Length: 274
Image 1 (cartoon, rainbow, N blue to C red):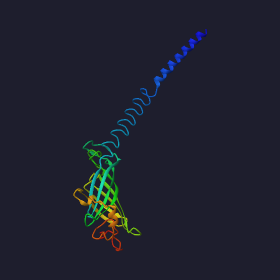
Image 2: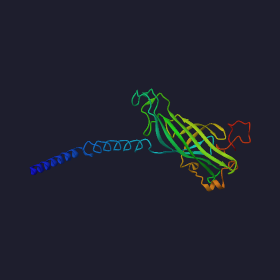
Image 3: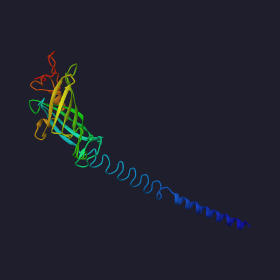
Image 4: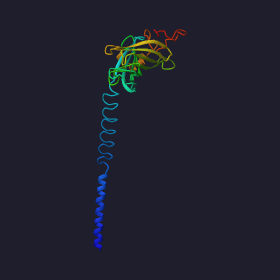
């Protein structure tokens, strides 16, 4: 009887072990159709996988938003000795546009697609020779509407406003090193009918932090390989030795100086210091 009981016990243990093993095998994590397996979170075609957020063909990937930089150097007609040499890079979409009637090549009665671009570069004031150039950094933004080149843009035409806006801040601080400054930053606000982030011309207004308003002006794109001022760079030694001083600015029309100083009561729209 004890022998029969022992045999029965062994049989039950073997049956239980077999059933437990079978259940564990069928439901083990990593099996087909389970967490971590094919077609699940972390697998192919899912979050983190190919063709998904962070993967190939997504925002920031090749040929998409955040792609190729563009450079453009502009001459300032109001201040012929000054240049803005800018790097313009796609930042983000602002609007996908409204209305789709008309189709490709047709007329869209809504607003055009808008895109924001980040701008970084330099503002150069060119002196009487190539060794007497002054420079400060620039940052800003371009917003385009209806751009049709590159990876952004609209198909057909739109009855909404198109073109581009540019905002620049050239960051200048120069003084005697003790109590007085004689050069300050300049803000430039521009528009164009060209639906491009680097158009051929910008129509602008500007002012500096001396509260001098410059009136209307125009920025015109030039060939930086042929324009020496576009490639100018001011090192620390030049700044320390020459400096951008009132004397150094004699004979140079500059956007960064206080053209009202010593001329109280005159119109602030006058041409800056000669």
